[in-house]
Length: 114
Length: 241
Image (cartoon, rainbow over all chains, first blue to last red; front, top):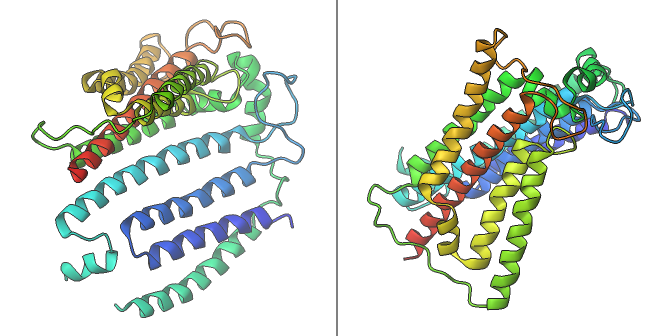
């Protein structure tokens, strides 16, 4: 059972990837990409977990209390910000695709441009 | 490539990828058993070395502050890209209509938006003391303006977030972060090295330059998200008309 959180991250990643491959709409595709990226949050946070550790915040607990790794938490924060900005940029591109090609189906977009 | 062939190909390669990934994660230390020195040392020394109680904030704005500079500019570049893609050349695009009809809904919504704004500022200000920080608080501040749009309509949203002000706040946040790094260099330390009085742990006056970097990132994040909302809302209005 001690590897279950890592296996969960693999599972979420593959679910997102499946969504991207079978997507019928660019909006759906962007959401699936966000799902795939969220697997990295699970992986990072579970790698940094320490048995019995609390949050690495020592506002109301004494210094030296057992806490989880703060570095992977900071990396996850970066990860979330990048995920949101990429989703926003891709949705803006989707709007342009809809305007220019009148469709958001990736298969039809590919057919139009050979 | 036909759709069924593509899905079949994906199935085969995903099975291989899953096997590879499971094999690689099996080589990781068991869940909860990972004791990396870097994290342990930071947890032990950051509170006394930097006088902050939130070690994650110390990592983001101090020990790995240079990474955050890159992150800020990814955000900045992405929002610039969105504005470039969606902003029309002519400024005569139609403004979104005010759809809110109920006065009770408007009053309640504006009240909640004000509360959310205060909560966002609180999360920003206490970022290096308790859970929170410039990024998290900045998003909460921006969502207060989004709630204002939902409750009071686009006109109120636009009046409180004039484009020139939002652009200025975003640029000041992104540029200010880099300027604080350069101030460290002028004081004879490395780029983004913590400077300033470290203050009393557990109070707002602590952490040295972490506090300034925290505010700079909050400015940039909230402005970036407000700009993002504005672009998509105006696009929506252009499609509807």
